[in-house]
Amino acid sequence: MAEIKNTLISTPQKKLELNCDVVVPGDKSISHRSMILGGLAEGVTEVSGFLESADCLSTMRAMQSMGVKIVKKDDKYLVHGVGKGGLKPPKSGKIDCGNSGTGMRLLSGVLAAQNFESEIFGDKSLNARPMGRIIKPLEIMGAIIESDENETAPLKFSPVEKLKAVNYQSPIASAQVKSCILLAGLYADCETVVSEPKLSRDHTENMLQGFGCQLDVDKQNLTVKMHGGQTLKATKVVVPADISSAAFFMVLACLSENSQLTFKNLCVNPSRSGVIDILKLMGADIDIVNETVNAGESIADVVVKSSQLHGIEIPHEYIASAIDEFPILFIAASLAKGETKLTGAMELRKKESDRITVMADGLKKLGCDCHELEDGIIIKGGKLSGGIVDSEDDHRCAMSFLIAGQFAENPITVKNCENIMTSFPNFLEICKNLGFDIV
Image (cartoon, rainbow, N blue to C red; front, top):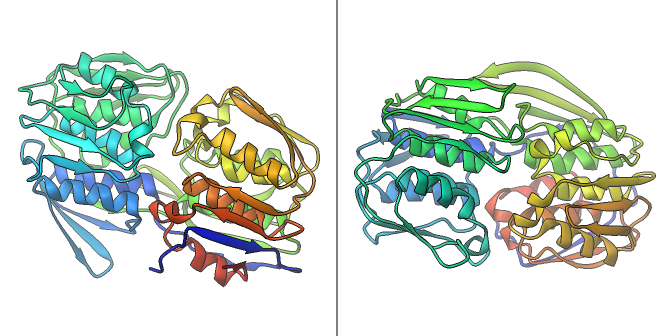
C-alpha cells in the first residue's frame, strides 16, 4: 500500500462522468470486533474481508500482545481464540491503540475484567479524546482504572477478580460505550443491561449472537440485556464493505453529471445507513438491490446516480446512524441548492478532531457561506472557490475536502492527510481509478 503524503492537492476535472462498480474495503467496525471476539472465543475464527487499516491492525496487534495467535492465510485471517479467561498480560504491560478510539474503548471493556495490570494509550489525538464515558460504567462494575484529571488516556487497569453486572442508562447514543459495557459484562455473573437515548450501531450485539452469546435486544426501548458468564464459540466472519468509506463516493456520484456508481456487498445495517437516508432527503437517486443478511448484518448492492441535491434540516433521528459521515455530507450541502441545517450533533466535536469547527473553517476558506452552531452547522449551498484547508489530522475531514476538490473552481490543497491510512488505505487508489487528479 502506497504511503499517503501529508499534503495533497485535489484539482477539479473539466468533465468527470462515472459509470462503474466501486469496491470499498471491509467494514471498520466489524473488523475491530472480529479480532476482539475471535480472540475471546473458544476455537479458531475465520475472518474474510478484514480491513487492513492502521486502526484495525492496532486492535489485531493488541490481541496478539495478549497471547492470541492470529495468522493470515491467503486472503483470510485465522484467529486462534484463547477463551475469556485465557488472555495474558502484554510483555511491555502496555497496549498502543494508535489513533483508534473504537479499539481503545472496546479493549478497555476487556482489560477492565482481567486479573493482570495493563495500560492502554494512543497517539496525541486519541489521548485527548474523552474516556470518562467508559470509565464511569466500568468503575460501577468494579473496575479499577487510573487516568489523568481530564479522564483521558493513558488508562491504567489494576487486576480484579470479577466484575459485577450493571444496569446502565447511557447519557449518549454511543456504540463504543455500549460495546465496552457488554464486553465487560461477559465477565460478570448476573445480567448486564445497557440502555441509550437513541439507537447506536448494533454490530456488537449482532456479532456476540453470531459467536453464540444469548442477548435480549429491545430496539423499541433501546435496551440490551445479557447474562454474564457466557462462552463465545468460534465462527466464520465475513466482513462486508464499509458504508462509511463508500459515503465519499456516493456524494461524488450524486454531484457528477451523467454518472452512476454501484457499491458491491455494502453493509446497510439500519444503525449505519443514515447517510443514505439523509442523501435521499436531499434528493439523491439511490437504489438498494440484492439485499441479503449474513450473521445478522444486512448486506446489499447500492446504486447511486447523478442527482440534483437540495438543502434540508437534518432529522435528529438520523444523527447517530450517520455520525461518521457528516464531513462528506457537509461537502454535499455546500454544493447543494439552498440551506442545510444540522443541530443536536454535539458528538461531532469529540471525534478525531472537532469536526464541526474543522469542516466549518475549511468550508469558509473555500468560499462557502456557513455558520457554526454549538451543536451543529448551517450551510448555504453554492460554489466552492478552491484554496488551502487543514484537516487537523482527521482522516474523514481530509478525504471529504479531497472529494470537494473535484467540484471546486480551483484546486483544493489539504494539509495533514496522513491519517487517511487509519481507515481507508486505498482511498487514493480508488480516486485515481475514477480519474481524479490528486498529487
